[in-house]
Length: 58
Image (tube, helix red, strand yellow):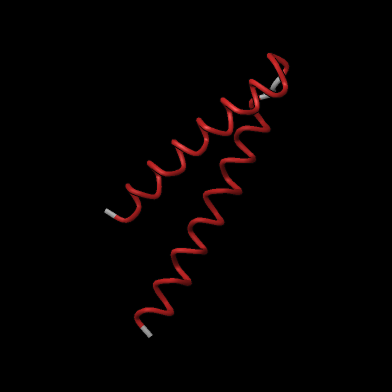
């Protein structure tokens, strides 16, 4: 269940990054930038939630 939530968050954030980048950069956006940004954000969220879980559970 945790991984499903993480994947949903990654998809939503990826869409937000794509939408904002499309508005800022126009139609010249490459899909690699969106994928890279999504992977970075997903990794940060995973590390944040993992460290938060580690701290709270002891």
